[in-house]
Image (cartoon, rainbow, N blue to C red; front, side, top):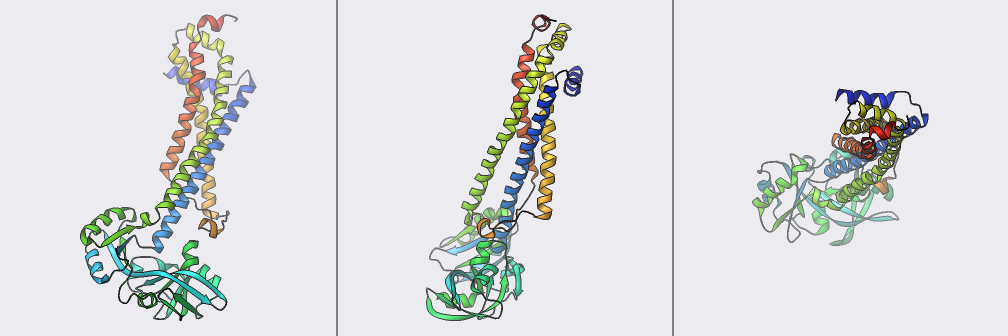
Length: 394
């Protein structure tokens, strides 16, 4: 086996009689490196999108929402008392949510009106941390607007606007008390936050709420806590996790990530055709050497292993170079954020990058597997040579 490794290294690195073989080998290495680097960067960006959206969705929403079959929860305090006793639950807070129309001067727009408890809400969501102007408590007649929504209406903290709801069609005044920026366009452009009592009055709910938001210890384990909550509350209550609320979005991201991986793997596949060409020309160049080796007792398996190792080494060099270049480019994108995005299209204002060791392992494994498959035919051609055929014209 040591002889196989020695011969493979000599065939790979020794000076060749045909410089064209070396050129093709260099092209093969470069092609694999480009393909692997592209895969690394694109998958890191897709993972970054996924992680960034998860963080912003979890920050602006409860991990778990408890609602009733008829749309209103008449006794939220009883629900909160039962839920907070369960293992894995950190906190719970009532909320009211409904559609409304906001107007300020000639500007008007439809919004999602959310009523919160300013004392308990910070323990469930991170909306208070997103505040960029004003105060976190909107007060009895105040409202906190998303940054894009405030810009659209042309208002700032201290300004007055009018609100109309399906249950209360008489315009009611609200004072802008704060501006928040969650970093996700849908929330920044469409969400207005008021006190839960204010929302109850505007939406005609009395003392009822539309749901109870629950924060759990581990967001990715919200499904397990959901089962406990369902067993504790039973009908008419039902629950929805943050993952179920955004199932279509995350399913689309996952499908896009898989498809991008498959498409960009074709770059590595095309580059590996150069490995096939390199090994076939190397077999022709080393036909005499193969004949001598077999005459000295080398088996077909040993000859096959030599050329397989050469091909895998070419693919491995390209893979390592590609991974190094891809990781370096990802670090530059993450640190300097020089690629900007339109926030109203992509939800984000910059290109997110998140390296995952699992994704990197899959990329490296796929590149090595394709490189190994590219070696099979040329190595088999070399192994089928006989000493007589190899040395006939020598």
